[in-house]
Length: 142
Image 1: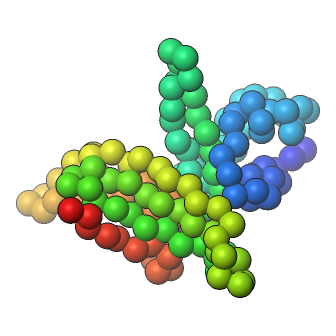
Image 2: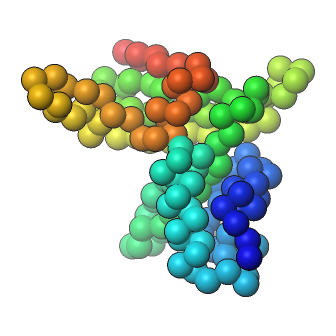
């Protein structure tokens, strides 16, 4: 049976988004519930980013894998007057970019959580995990 690691490695194989259908076609022997559980688990661990977009009139998910140990990975979080946007860049050893992907994160207010008398900023797990490694840089754009 295919495990989480095999699906994650497949998603890491290219620096791009994969649709649920792409993943399902790659692993035709897996039950859709197994694929969904694996994707949710990887997202919760901060190893996968899920981006929801609208195709026609229906929402659809796209997934991109993130490897915190990838030395070529850099992420910038941009604050565009309260609207958050992330830019993910993979760089080759020679300094050239292989892929750049943008993700709309939405309003900063979506990430503020009251804890007692304090307001805490709670980012998605992938940002929190990568923030610890120094991969994530925050920029304020005017």
